[in-house]
Length: 274
Image (cartoon, rainbow, N blue to C red; front, side):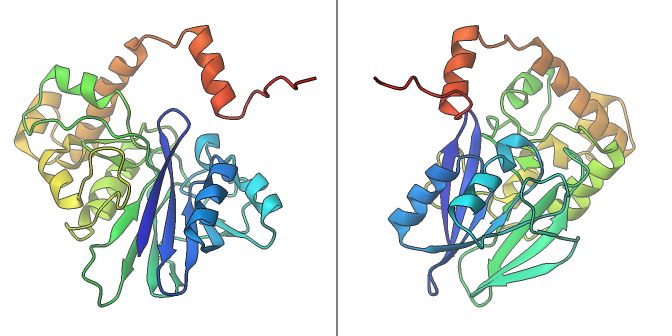
């Protein structure tokens, strides 16, 4: 299993997962389809399937155009709001692409229909990987907590689980997010990776996250003391609230920067030359 990490937009990634024997490929979270197809062509693989973690535009906006450019493509996810969805997945469902196994894990929190994908190969020395709607991860934080920790974590969270952080809770309860992070993702093998080849940021394994990610350490005394809560879901809710306060205080982009990003994302067209 080979994973190509493709940076897109301001702080997101697409992934191309390649079965190296059959040369079949699966894409995760397509936001810029033409960029993805460039990589597909360069790798000389056959793209058959798209796995979408959730319905937000920065993870699913490219599905419709990709299906138009490549008819017959299968788009899978757990939320009916996902653009160009072919079939809705359920928690615990398993897929297979050649030697690559995929276990679908419903992880509500960021959205109510958020699905994470756990991938592995039998009898393979390479560690498994989990895709949980990645955005550029925040810097690593030490095991001890202080208010300044959250200014680091707020800078660029992932949408389910990221390096030393987690996504914003938008559509689910704190208890549901606790179950997703700790009881579902947190119980995967500790050697599980979030990124593989072409890693543009800090790589991470689940075992490392269990050591320093406060959002996975909600049952530990230092984290409870910081939040003033005991119940894990309540601890998580306070952590998310503290981080959100730093996000709201962040300086907004200037109009020129917003326009440049919109052009980069394909939301604006360039002037036609006469």
